[in-house]
Amino acid sequence: MEKVTQLDTFRVMSERVGRFNVQGKRFLIPEMNRFSSHLLAGVFHSFGVNSEVMETYEGLDLGKRFTSGKECFPCVVTLGDILLFMKKERERLGDRFDPENYMYFMPEANGPCRFGMYNKYHRIILDSMPGLDKVKIAALNSDDAYSLDGLIPREKMWDFRKAGYLSIVVGDILDRLLWRIRPYEKAEGMADTCINDATERLTESFAQHSSENDLSPILGDLIEIVKEAREIIDPRIPKRPLIGVVGEIYVRTHVKSNQDTIRTLERYGAEAINASIGEWINYTTYEQVRLAKSALRLNLKRFQFKGIKESLFRYLKYSITLFYQYMQQRKVYQRVRKYIDIEEDHKIGHLEKVLKGNNTFSFEVGTEACLSISSAIELAHRGYNGIVNIFPFTCMPSNLTASIAKPLMAKLNIPYIDISCDGSLQPGREAALRTFMYQAYQHFKTHGRP
Image (cartoon, rainbow, N blue to C red; front, side, top):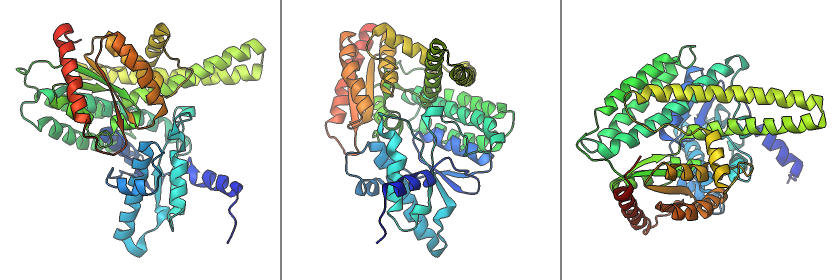
């Protein structure tokens, strides 16, 4: 038996996990946000990539079979998704199944969050199965704000990034539109039907227009959907307590992983608003601006001219990118808010100021904790009636959030609850959410809402 060395392991990781050209492959996207994932698949289609969003959560038992329980829950869910997809493809195609035709998309972020290890662990599991070692994993990293370099031909990269970012923003707006209209719908199910149909229409619109220079037809389709959705609201239904949701990006967004917590909150009288995907994308770009600025100051002090040039270039590059993202995001939200009063998104620089002013945490520590803690404080000061922190069981950044945000919210007399998720059914959770909503309603009766 051939001995496998550590060097072989590193070689496998570099050869089978990385930035690979996705042209000519079936590009498999895990579902995180129901809407953004499908819209992003539409963008890939527009640029000639055969992309699809995998069925999600149905392979959870497979994911659990190949994990120990110590892994972060999103790792288990996404592993189950890819294993079930490949199992079904083998069964469907038989001898015609060729694993080299597929490429699996799993981005990453640097520590201390374990997200940076998902694709490495998935690689180990895929390599342990006959033939699946040939399925490459396409990865992007937060270190360069998820640059697409290597996945998309360089001449198409800027156009793709513009359309890709727009798909994230539009996906966030579909979410916020759903949360705005569903608590006040004229008949049960109207809001879900409207937004599900809207997702299909917009996915087709992104597939048709993303590779064009003019993205305005996509925005035109979005506005028509907003107008239709607005008509679902029954104006006779009184306003409800407003609940802010923060936490780990995957579990708070993936409705099956969090057991549709927002719908449960709505059932007990809430109007809830979750933190966006766009917030994380903006944060990764903002972080590069912040790090480049620090490096520039250090190089200026040391008179290191090569370092000054490099850090200045990075600072300008990411500052321009962040400016564009904010401009694009603001433009879309402003157009939508002409027709319906959905919440706008936070600016990351403002959230950092909130933390500095409160002196409770620091962007120097990084991770989603800095976003979740600052968002909870900001929403509390804006008059929200309660804060929910949703996260994977054992998630370190989210437990940091819980340890800091919970006493802060108590000091501000804002109802607060932690919801940890590991795939198990917790019979006491609904009672806890019902109690939380009672407290939120008392806050609402006393203080109103923003």
